[in-house]
Image: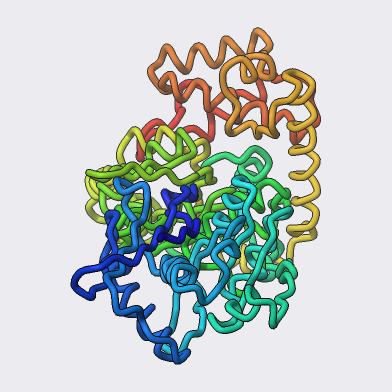
Length: 512
């Protein structure tokens, strides 16, 4: 006789069905777990033994075989403890054999029988609902799993409470979804003195979802501006909130089911490895670019990152997803982010002009900025050279316009983009200008004749690549949207070209 319980195995944010089958057979007394388990899954048998002992239950004096099917799918994580224990309880007759029909289960067991929190409750609940099953998960994960509307959820604190529920001596209620909490208070743009060009670029980037680079000496306000970008962005939509929360759930970053509509802002240190940025490791966890999905990835001191780590971002910035390849599996994570980067002009920080200028310029500038590859630079829509802040700038009163006023213009421009995309291609999901492509881009970015001539001149001069042409069109459309202009004109193209940088030390001089 065998008992079966459904659980899931994670491939990125996708939860794939796994059937846990437990059978008691004759032969040498042993407890075997088969079906490509990793070390954590193989150790489940000892945690199950300990939990049974904590409840005063004796293990059967027979050979126990727990099969995790399909057998060719790798199984990772501690959440297989609970389904193995439930299937064993079913085959032992402790709970009715049919009690587990219609349920999937996940959870780690402690040695005293408590069910401990584990990562991935939200995507597991979504997958269970898609299979027309309910989900049994730890009490601590119940508020998170309850966000999967329409899925029945049981969230017991301990194994004994679950046994009593299935035997009818105790009734477990469904958990309520966790709260929607406010994110950290956004920093106000009013705090930044001077740097009007940088503020303008930040507004354009926020309105269209464009990638942005600040270049300037230490103390010029590069990080200050980048940290104020979240205050200009609208909150996550319901669809974006679910997408982002599923990534954070797999990473174990959701506490007590609390979600936030604030867009992610991730700022990894420049010592981060390629796996830390794009995902990987022994269990192929999501990297910083995926944890920033639908938000902002800020890379301060850009040239100090490893060359391999930086170049690994090229594909995610273009496709909006990360594919982590392994010998036995390919794991896909979403990575639709807005890249904001900051860098000094050279290693000494001051570049080749003004007080404290680098004595090794221009070679020092070329070598330092050359650490950032041309193909990565080609994916950055706006590059702003920020001069040093002077004493006169610091003596200025606070700006009359802060984040609230700029955010209102950004929201209006984004609404215009959404309405236009729906009008041009009905049924198209909301697409920001920074992601527009193909037929949609052609129809929304029709240039006037002077604008097209200017863009063609830049292309003929070799200042922009084919990708640069597309990104300049997108940027021009965003600049026009901020003005409320219906068509894209030469002045919009000129401003977009002024912000393009073909190489770390290149620009558009002689074209505009």
